[in-house]
Image 1 (tube, rainbow, N blue to C red):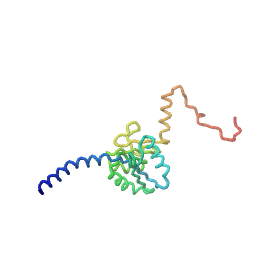
Image 2: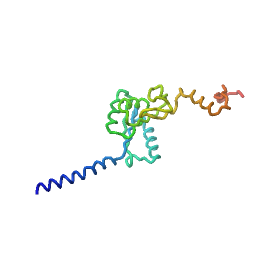
Image 3: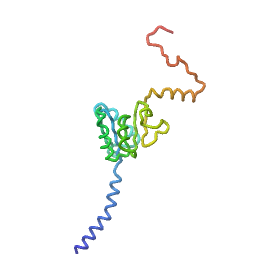
Image 4: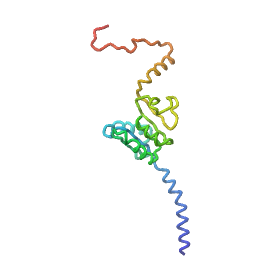
Length: 178
């Protein structure tokens, strides 16, 4: 009788094992959020990030999990935070330029999305703006280095426009000049 009980237990375990593995795979995807700043000073960024995800149909706790990591303005902590985050195997990691470097040094397979205000090519984050390459892409909001490129594109798209030195000059408020 013991032999039959053992075989029954063994077979039920073998049948249940793939079901347990499938259940683990159906867990919600994890988005890593890594910032070099403090959490206290960045509530608005986290709130905007969550709202953007919500607008796209991703709600934390329902169909996505967000794993936040904060560097507390200490850049020497970023590589450890990145490694810790990668151990959780997120679907994607979102960060700023500084944290992207730390994540890039740790993984070449997990997609990394950066948000920055400096030239990512000069910072060594991407190969070029048209084709970033690797597992890194992102958004640059303001980049003074790109102004010449943008003006060049404008003159290419609108050749009838001619640059004028007066185009960016605005009268001062309260001046008497006409």
